[in-house]
Amino acid sequence: MLISTDVWVAALIRRAEIEGAFATVVKRGDARAGSVIVKAYDTANRTARLYTEAFGTDGERLWMQPVSSDSESELDAYITRQRGYDPDLWVVEIEDRQGRHFIVEKVAAG
Image 1: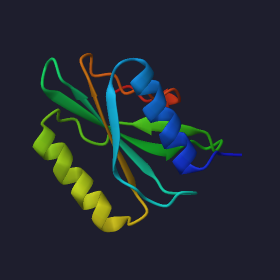
Image 2: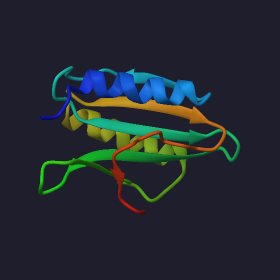
Image 3: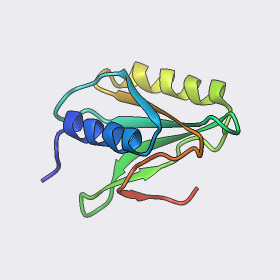
Image 4: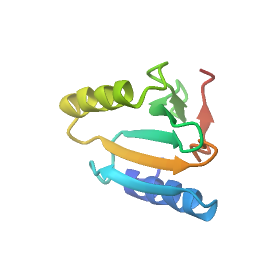
């Protein structure tokens, strides 16, 4: 059984804060079953990466990078398009000196 999105997001934000990063919910979606996009901003290099959730064939949550660019404007354009398709979407932004995403589930190489 998967945990609700609001609980998962709260745990992600807490992990980031414990490690000294800043994390915030930019857009709140459906509390129980909304999809999540995580934007990880590397404050040292001024680059960003996006991670979107997907589910494997076994139902396990995994993460992938939907955009290969590290340009923040291109990533923001992707987020805007996705928000237009999915009103239940959550958007979480993390700012970290090392650009960490703090996702503990499987992250596809990209």
